[in-house]
Structures are given as structure tokens and as C-alpha cells.
Length: 199
Image 1: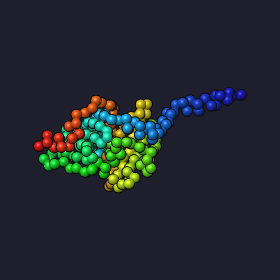
Image 2: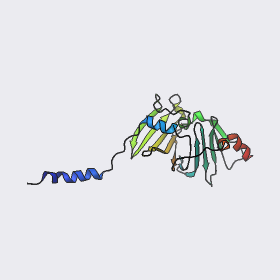
Image 3: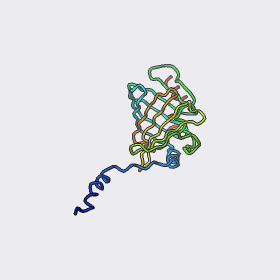
Image 4: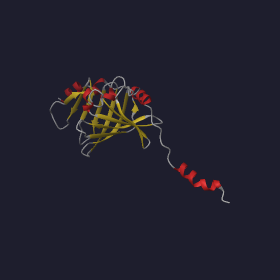
């Protein structure tokens, strides 16, 4: 008679060969992580809606401040500070294009207190290929677009975000190792200082 254990041996081997599905990271843990992310920096790769790719460095100082420095040949600069977002075009001598930070999905992670448990803020929360993805929008202004945050665990870290604008176009920002840093000089995020420097 055939040994019954021999019948199940291939099945057991197959189960152990399959990668274990990662557990979804709870929203309260992600909120705590983002609230603890005071000053940080890393490099980034940006995949634009038209398929073009840009690279550069990003600096974050929560609440409310972010600096995107794009590498040549782009060499543009995007600053979030004092409730505004300013886009400096390296090829133009004109003042930067500005609009309120509150009208962008980035405001949701740069706000003084991140609470992903707030009613209607999170519109998606799922485990996808070993990552946890959280889609967030302003419940009072869904027309401002949304941002999908992608996290890995052990240690918990923000790896990328995908912004969908009011027209449905998507921009993906893939982060390097987002590491805590020492504080930045105030001029790092000053829109006024950058304007004076360029003039």
C-alpha cells in the first residue's frame, strides 16, 4: 500500500515554495509613520503622464514643505512652502507658476497631522505584490485628484506615490531610500528666496 504521506509530499513542497503573501499594513500604523517623518531626503525617478522620465532629488520637511530638484537637462524646481506650490521653469525668466498646496493631493501627506482613518479620506487600501497601497483624496474636494501611496514593511517605508490629477492623468514618483536627515536651512523651501536668487 502506498504511504499516504507520500501522496501529500508534493503538495506540501509546493506550498512552501510559494511566496507568502505580505500582510496589509494598518492605516493607523501608516499614519504614525507619516507623522513621524519630519525631515527626510532621497533621490527619485518620475514617470510622467506622457511616458517621459525625469530624475532628481527630493527634500521633505513636514508639515507643509517639500523641494523637488530635477536633474539636467530638465533642471526645473518645484517648491511647496507657506501653503503654496511654486514651479520654477529653468528655461524661463518668468516668475514661478503658483497655486495653493491645498489644491494638490500632496497636501494630504504634508498636512500637520495625517489621519488616514478620517471619514472618506481613504478610497483604497490593499496589499499588492508585497506592498501596501493606500489611495487618498480630499473628501471635500475629490475634484482636486487623488494620491496613491505605496509602502513596504520591515521596516515600514514609503516607496512611491502615484498622483492622478483632475483630468485623470497619472504621474508616478518612485523614491529611493527615504532616510531621515538633519534639519534643512530655511532657504531650502523658501519660494521668495528662490525668486531672489534667480533674479
